[in-house]
Length: 130
Image 1 (cartoon, rainbow, N blue to C red):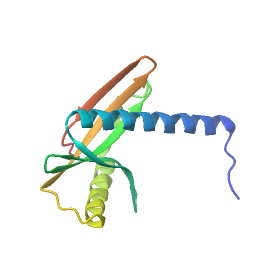
Image 2: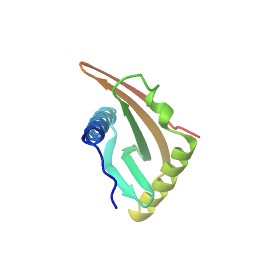
Image 3: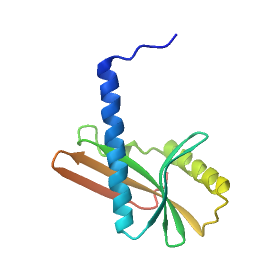
Image 4: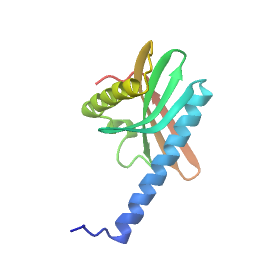
């Protein structure tokens, strides 16, 4: 038996999805302006998804994007836990294997985006470690 989802919950989920997509678009434009070459977005692996993959020179950068509509729930980057970073690293290995890509090095960055009406804020954390 399927659980019923209220119209309000469905609308809230749609807003969160749209906000996440907007944040990923913003982050992709940001790294492109840095001169990186975005090669994949929203790649789905066996146990999760990688938001952005990009080349910065010969280094493959896996970018986790966290987007919020305000500061009420803390800094967006706080949502990237050690277990989430470990999952991202496993997924990066899966992506490399499936695409038969060899990279000089692989780095995980976090881009935190806050999008509010009329304003935006982006913060970039390079080489995030657990």
